[in-house]
Length: 110
Image (cartoon, rainbow, N blue to C red; front, top):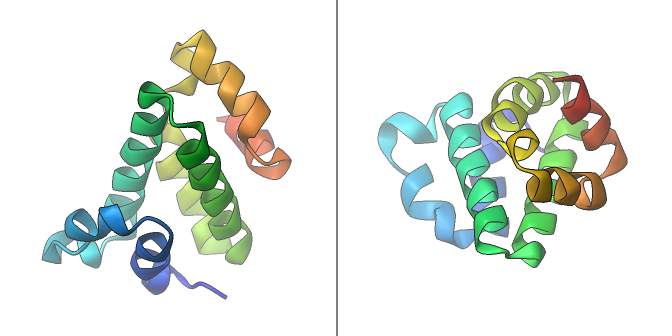
């Protein structure tokens, strides 16, 4: 089970390339900052057409959302709001196709 204080390590275990950004002192202890960085990383995967990375990002976000209520709230209010999928038809279609159903339900309510 991942708790909010372990999100940084969980994200780095899935995406080692995020380690430098997530290890900055003012970020490594801030869940909202970590999730903003993760949202930017996810958005870049869309822009670069990296569907494998995008799918992994969405799966990880869904796993975090399911871990505990604080994380579910943070994913909804920080991560999902940091994604700009609704502003681009291609990205919106990818979200519908690749997002786990529970995460997509939350995403469409935002």
